Image (cartoon, rainbow, N blue to C red; front, side, top):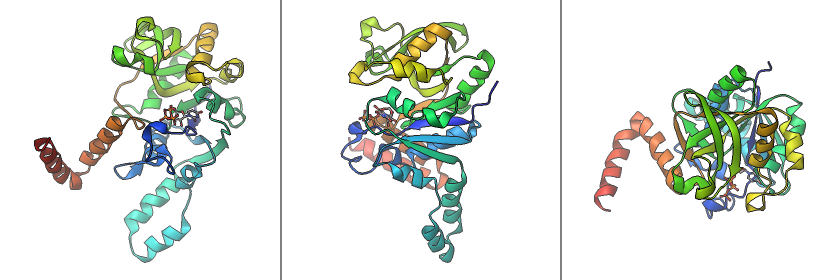
Length: 290
Ligand code: UTP
């Protein structure tokens, strides 16, 4: 069975929830503590054995590719100033992964974004990681799916339980639990009303798929929100060939949600021993003045 070497990371959306911050800066380049959101996602991919990253971008997002390239002028400045730790930090980012990019010329939805990358996948199975979804703790998120993909030899989606009043924001699966946290997917539905949701197991931004998904995507009509939905294409793939779901362990932050974005900043700030004490005392002050 082929290794999962490639990941498609769609980053072509408008990021409207994060405006005005994202008027000219991609949401994926907003910092969480000292790194942009997208660097955390790529580091998770690398920890899971992925070698090649395919970004699906738009005309305003080339800064994302640039982040994973050398900046020789800045390297020179840091070298001359003797700031060798910073020099290493920026060189490491340039060397961490092979980067490819393809444009999504019209923002027609997540499913359409994935279809734009078909030519770069070359018929291999591949991972998808949504570029604004951060996962932390334990086995790297996409690595959990890759493990199940190799064991079950079927496409896999990552799921997490969400409260019932949030099921209408996600793709929701109907599945049979065949081992603790591992489900055989019977069906799935994008953004169901609470009363129609088959469960509260929501598809979060991690997938391992086989290239036959592209044929399903080509036949998929616009669905929820008028967008070409990846969930609609996966629903057909699951019905025809079967699919697994993994209840992911660890924490998840959606960088497009301000409360989660700000929590992620605090979470990473607190991991830094040099910052921890000052940050905690400021947070205590804020709480007192609320
Ligand atoms: P989101 O809906 O979270 O992102 O899509 P968005 O559209 O950028 O943000 P809002 O809702 O307007 O704030 C999930 C992922 O799919 C990508 C986004 O970049 C994000 O990573 N996406 C979405 C595309 O690449 N193309 C699309 O047409 C839609």
